[in-house]
Amino acid sequence: MNLPDYFFADLPAGASITPSMIGEACQTLKRNREQYLRHRSTDDIIRALSSLAESWMDPEYPFRLKLLADGPEATGFSKEILRIGIDEFFSAINAKNLRHLIVQDLGHAKRLDGFHANDLEQNTDRASTVRGPELLVHIAAGNIPNSTLTSMLLGLLLRSAQFVKCGTGGSFIPRLFAHSLYEVEPKLAACLEIAEWKGGAHSLESVLFSEADCVTANGSNETLEKIRSHLPAKVRFLGYGHRVSFGYVTHEALSGFDARKIVTHAAHDVIAWNQLGCLSPHVFYVENGGKMTPEEFAGLLATELAHHEQHTPRGKLQTEEAAAIHHRRSFYDIRSANSQDVKKWQSEQSTAWTVVYESDPRFQLSCLNRFIYIKAVANPTEALQGADNVFGQVSTVGIAAPLNRAQLLAEQLSRWGVPRICPIGKMQQPPLTWRHDGRPSLADLVTWSDWEM
Image (cartoon, rainbow, N blue to C red):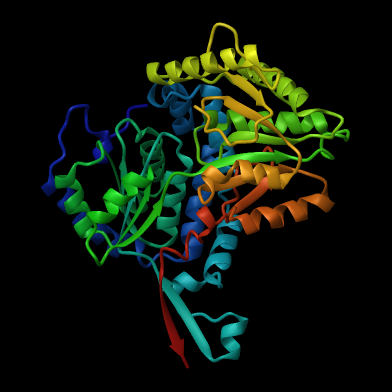
């Protein structure tokens, strides 16, 4: 399949993009939005998006086949990782979930179509409507596509023209998705632009930001501050910075029949997108006192990761990524040789996976790519004290606990500031309705109009 040159990201390698090209593209996007998108109904857009997602689930869909054929070289993920990740993402994009998201965030399924009132508003003789930004700019980070694809879907629901700026080498999947939309809904796709350049190109970004009504960005905290400092005062900014995640396993969960299943679920969280997302665990805290000890949990997890490497391989790494794993392994070789409180399991003759067990509860940042820590703790309080160095930076905590303890654990994690708590095994599979970093995804982007009747 050869993709036509519809987007900046389709230009051949080495082709230059100029500020005037950016300005003209933004004006074209706004005109196309006014002509093709602004007056589309919510139901109409939902039908288009859910139908496209269903196509992506078809094993013979040409764009899916191209992703699986060319994606490993373009993204660094193995074919199997891409297949699992794309299936999990698009399986959540359906009419029911899209409508639930709108009602959850905006209070009424027709809120984007005009003035409507829910039960509370009817009691106060009031109706409301919302509108999305005229031009919505997304600054994407990394190769994990979920966040960027979700942003594009949200923008289409809001009837916004969108300019998606990807980092160098990061446009492959968003570009494929945009082309798949173009094939079935060319007028909707005409309201999208996909481009790729290295961050910090101020001559390009100043033009882009001057045309935008709202900018969303994913990246390091330093990157977000730089973007914020270059935005005009009129532009709304939504930044999603550096976040980490971890898991917590209670001793009761490791004393039942499902203990080994919990290990399997934990392995799934580690291999999903090769542990590279903000939702991926760096550490699993495992309580002492169960029939399975934290050290035994670590050993079984190592066995599970070895099994997955046979069927769901990680894929090749950049030289510096592999070097980071080798360096970290060497450090723990020394520690494990001199302490019974440290133990390490690793893939032989490769950096495919690594499990480190420590009795020290201090949170450790993993070097990722299937490098996971298991920490023994007595209780959640000890785990949270150990994670104090990432307080305020945690995105997700996956838990394995019986129901009577799960609620108490969730309440404690919530008071500590964790915005998302989910079962272990689902850490990289948030529902479409999840609140990113504790914030509503659609409601953060809209402007309201209230009619007091």
